[in-house]
Length: 245
Image (cartoon, rainbow, N blue to C red; front, side, top):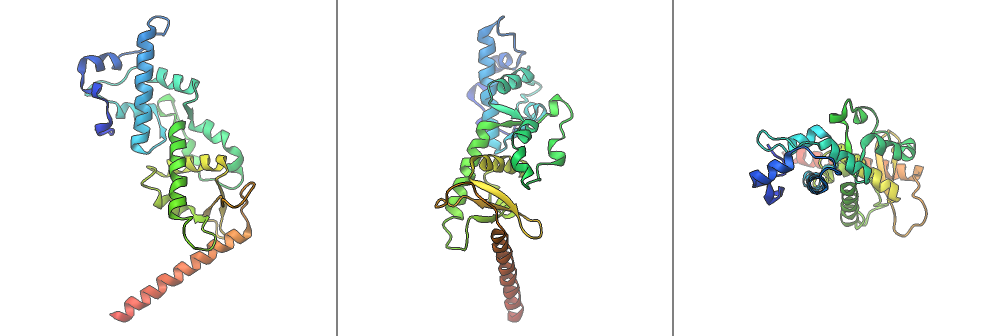
């Protein structure tokens, strides 16, 4: 089933036009109009599908499933991908990892392992960078509207696993969440630390502060104190419910 639903353009219902758009792309020096038309159409389709699915990461195999039209599959997706790589609209997930290696080395490791295990061209994972930036904007706005307004001790300290659960209306999965966090780290809007028992904790920028965000032992202590208070509150509620029975 096509996942874009009503987000397909009107031309998708036109058999004649789509037959042409689905066909193999001729070299640009042979037919520049055909080349430019198909590059523009499929690049736009990929961008819209990433936005529609709230998922910044895709493979050629995924695109084939998204854009199957009956028994037709888009031809020359590899040409489209190469064009998008050339103009910097996408990058491979491996290159995205390498670009962010510095902050990964500072303690954030959840990208490692199977996340980077591409085996062939059709399974190579790509990141749609404009969608990453949009997700980062949305996630930051969500934090500011839902967390930063709380009159709580250090509201900029947030448990990463809990924040991911709260952001599921913004991003489709953990991989896209991690990619988005990388963008926020690169912007200097968040840093990633760990609690004393190894939980991943986010520290968002305090607008009143200047310079790089630093993770401290005090931040870890605040998180641990919150965790203890939350457990105590749950235990009190459990005992109250038990007493009412």
